[in-house]
Length: 449
Image (cartoon, rainbow, N blue to C red; front, side, top):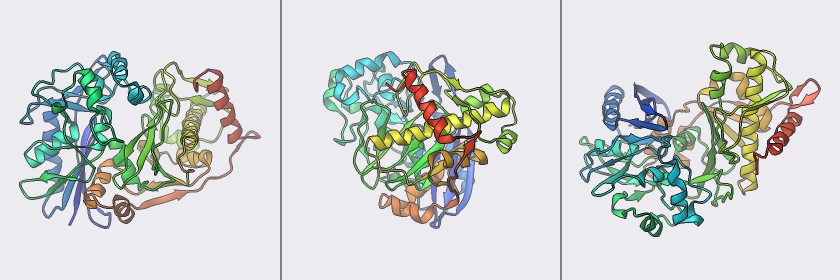
C-alpha cells in the first residue's frame, strides 16, 4: 500500500512514495530546463512527460493506491481537443501579457480589481487563439498522460486562470466580454477527485498548486496553523473558515478540500537577496556565527512588493548600518522575519484566527539560526516538518482519496522538532523595538498605502 506525489517544478520533477503511516519509501527526481527571453518564460511540456515517466519508473508503481500531482501556480499550455500540445508551456512568472491585466479588470472590476495580477494565466490566455483549443494546466497535462485521456482541472490550479471559487464556476459573463469561449476551459473539480486510472488501474487524483502542496506536507490545515515557505521568496498560507477579503489585493485564497479557505500571499522578499548581497559567501558559516543586531535590511529581490502590502514602487533599503558580511547576513534575516510577522498581522486584521503555530518549509530551513530567529520575532512556536516536500503533500492528498484531508495529514505528517520563541535583546534594544522602527520606515516611504 502506498501513494505517490508528483511535484512538477520549474527546475525538476520530483516523486515521493509514502505509506499510510507517513514513511517515505522512495524518492526520485529529474531535471527540467526552461527557455527565458526577456519577460517570456517557457518550457517544453513533452519534457515533463519524459521526466515523469522516469521518476515513476524509479520509485516503482507496483501495488500503488493512488497518484496526485502539484505544479507551479499559473503555468499552462494549449492543446488540441485530443490533448496534444499546440503551444509551449507558458510559465507562472511569464510577464508577456502584463499590459492586458487592466483590460481583464475592466471586464469585471468587482471580481478582479484587487486580485488579478499581470503574470497570472488569464492575461496571457487573452492573446492566444482558442479556436478548437483547450486550456490545460501543467498538472492536468501530466494527469492526462497518465490516464490516457484529457482530464478536469482542480479549483487550485484554476484560480489564476480566472475561476470563480465562490460561485464554483467559470465567470461566463466576464469571459463573454473578453471574447473567451467557455468551451476552451476545462471542467473543474475539487482536489482529491479521481480523474481516471492508469493502464495498471492506479487512480490519479486531482491535485493542487505547489504552494498548497507544501502546506499539506506541513500539516497546516486547521485554523490558527500556518505554513511559511521560505526560499528565493517568502510564501505564507493558512486556513480560515470564512473567505478573507483583502481590499489591497495582497491576500488571495484557495479552496480548502475539506471546506473553508486557504488564504495567503507571496512576498517579493526572501532568501534570494543573499546571493546578490553576499556572492560566494559561506552562508552556512555565517548562520552559525549570526546573532541579532541593531540593523535591518528590507530584502526585496526586485523592485515592487506583493505581500503583505502591494507597493509596485517599493525598493530595498537598510535601516541602520552594516559593516561586514556577518552583519549584512543578520540584517537580511531580520528583514525577512519582520516581513513575515507583518504578514501575519495583516492576515489577522482581515479576520484570520490568531497564529498559534507556524510550520517552516523551504530551502532556508537548513539555516538553524534563522529558524530560531523567526520563532523569536513571531513570538509563537515554529515547527519543522519531517518531510516538507510538496511532492509529499501530494502523496498525502492521494491517500485522502478526496475525503478528510485534514485527518489524513494528521496521521501521516510528522514534526521533526519544535522551536519555542525566546526573548531577544540587542545592544539594549529589543527586537520588538527594531520591528516597530522598520514598520514605521515602510510607512514613511509610503509602501503600506
